[in-house]
Amino acid sequence: MDEVLIKAEHVSKKFCRSLKRSLWYGAQDVTRSLLPWTRQVDAEISADPDADYPFPALRTDEFWALKDISFEVRRGECLGLIGHNGAGKSTLLKILNRLIRPDTGRITIRGRVGALIELSAGFNPILSGRENIYNRATLFGFSKSEIDRKFDAIVDFAEIEDFLDMPVQNYSSGMQVKLGFAVSAQMEPDILIVDEVLAVGDVGFRFKCLNAMADLMNRSAVIFVSHSMPQVFRVATQVTVLNRGRVIISSTDVGKGVDHYLSEFNISSNIVAGSGQATLGSFHMESQNATANKGEMLRVAHGGAVTFHVGFQVDPGIPRIRIQIVVWNMEMLPVMDIMDADRRGYAVDVPNSGGVKVSARVDHIFLNGGKYILSAIAIAEDQSRIYCRDDRVGNLFVEATAASWAHTLVPAVWNLDN
Image (cartoon, rainbow, N blue to C red; front, top):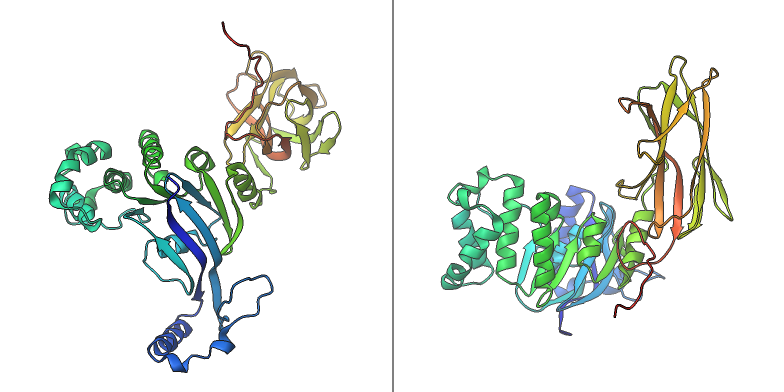
């Protein structure tokens, strides 16, 4: 299980923003590769003080899509590769899948590779699903007899029994993903590369794929690219965060990498929705040792208490409203709804002035560690209309450390059973 199947050593790749210059540079590079004595090595080595490896100097309009990327993935491991759009993930996967060559460094791959980088990659659109199964598996190096033995399992996994003989060009994106993943998984590759394709499949199929990847990890090395952090937490044993082509964090602490990835996004802008019959006038938070006003962040220890103070200005003629506070994680999924005992929002009479001010105390914040976004909401008493939903009125930062991506960490009373 300690066998290294993927090893990247100082891998870099540069591209050119200008098409004309790119063609000219390509002609120069081809000439130099054919006539080695024409190379001007000394003039091409950059003096990057942050680099411990020599890199070719950039020419006009060139930029590093990847620079000095190094990592190892062993059999039984899954590398979660994350980063915002344009960070270099797809470029690295294309290098790993031998679609393009790096400008510097070396990739060592041992074993058969199964890759899901493009939804329809490897499929002939005019051939049927049955024919594409044989074509794709043949590309993986399997004989017809081996494919025959796996065929029923592939069809069962892909859930396309009724469409086997239909041209793949008539398949939906989700069906193509199912078929591609089924072939790759059932062919049991030594290395599996998955790039965001699970975002297309339905929920049931995503669970099936994640379970298959967990099973494959017993005998394979997996590189998993996704913007879904719960999926990364579920399958990854290590994580690498890319930013502008460089490795920012590479760690077996998946939570550390995910936290850094999420912190790179700017979520400071405020969004207000609703009928407009109420507006947020004030928002304030306080914990034992800190306070925060509207738009600010309050740091609270896991299990600590927080009091929220909310003020709305309500239009005349509305006698009564309900108020609630919603806590969202960084993927904008609701993780906690703060309301009263009837679980419909705190009901309050509106005075003649229209000004309503309330407070809500939560004695224990059992959220997992990390940053959360708050929304303050005013709704009709019968919950038929949202008068105001003011998103991102503030942020909570819960100080806790946990290996899981669970939304809450609940301390229980544990005892030995006799």
